[in-house]
Image (cartoon, rainbow over all chains, first blue to last red; front, side, top):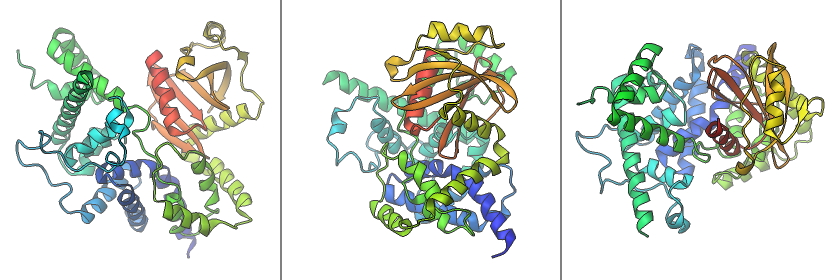
Length: 182
Length: 264
């Protein structure tokens, strides 16, 4: 192993490892599965290290998320397929949840502002909306960076984000209403 | 009146994506349009909900170790990362236990681990020149924990702590009472961060300390950093820069930030 390799490894460690939780957060929201998220995160770092010499050094975060997104897509090619026009998020279009609920009857009792419920609601969003809101709210990426990571124009990022928020608000409202009735 | 073309800009305003000129323009519009004012309020409520603890997740313990194992020439044993991560477990660490056990098994028995962890801590502290401020903040935090200088004014009364700053610095940091949220006011002090004077408001939770550094200006910085096992959280408000430094779990730091922000 050369000294240059060591320096490169060192640089990677300092830049990329502090973002581990964020990478995992995105992977977890997108896969809704702890094991899969963990595997995807690890694969992302392995790939990132492999291509690290090609990283220009401006901002590692969008770069890392781009790799993660590629990893997720290679594991499930249909994951980020754009939605057909006018579809998405309507009642009946609920994707399978990410696995906490069934095992946990407490969720039924949980107050609407419980973090777990919020995670559930985010988990139900169609993936292109979900990734927009997770990258914005949990990963603190700018619109420009989200556009870079997801490979769509900024205008599309903005409309997806707006849509994600509308759907979350609607779901939230429905939940609160239901809670009041009971 | 239709504001459909303004809707995306209302989101952009809430996300801090507008330049000053456009931000003023949209703010003026919101002031005169109940429809857009409603959307803006709903967006902000949602953003607030999404800043709740427990939504930003922690990577499972052991994952960092496994990734590090794939890196060339580690400077230190994985224990250096293991120790702080372990302490923060439990918020939502529903991870692959098998992996964790395997990782722990693999790294158990390293008698030199402590020495190496110390080296790593030293390395992280010293070598991270890109994060002068973070290092300076963690240094300040560590000094305060070492009993050298936790507070200049010790009081759980905000009406004592806040005026104390007034005579000493150009700024007076907000000192809200967060006792009901589980954060006890401990006191305040003046510290020096990266060569500038900072007001430090000290809060406690259980046996943990949160040092909140405040100084004028709103220079951009990452909202969250981690250094030597300490978490740093950064935000700006009303022309002031805030940095909270603590060894609490991330979820509790989220809670603190939310409580402090809500009260100021």
